Length: 180
Image: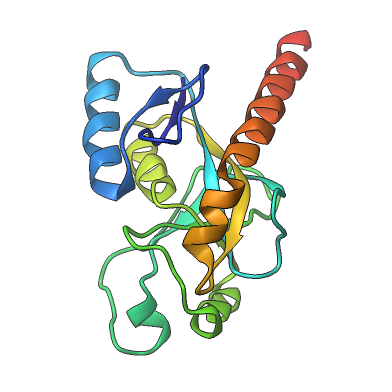
């Protein structure tokens, strides 16, 4: 099953699940309860913490939920804040998820200490639900912006092209996999 966020981030080959952690968790859990998929692939845009460039395509099976307050030492969590469906030794780019878009470039550089490279609002929810239902899962992302004060404007400027590139990439990968 191929899924996406929804609203203005939809694809003709993906089922929208909602924007952010809560909507995605509720709607994906409902979908898994009624008709458990064999595999989940999330497709969406992402912001880069600085190492990956605009329109880079990233595939990952690892997500975190690290809030900016943790990076500044103003918060902690007793919860496990990293989830992965990666069963290989291949190193993933960790995708951080929050209901907020980061705009503090200096603070977000601290994500590198934890091996986190990009952010997407929904991916942690997707992998958490997949783990709960024992469903193999992964994500494919296209970078639309850097996590700085221009994040929203750059996202808007680059979003349509990112969706086009994601569509091409996913359709190409599906063809590759169906040939095997």
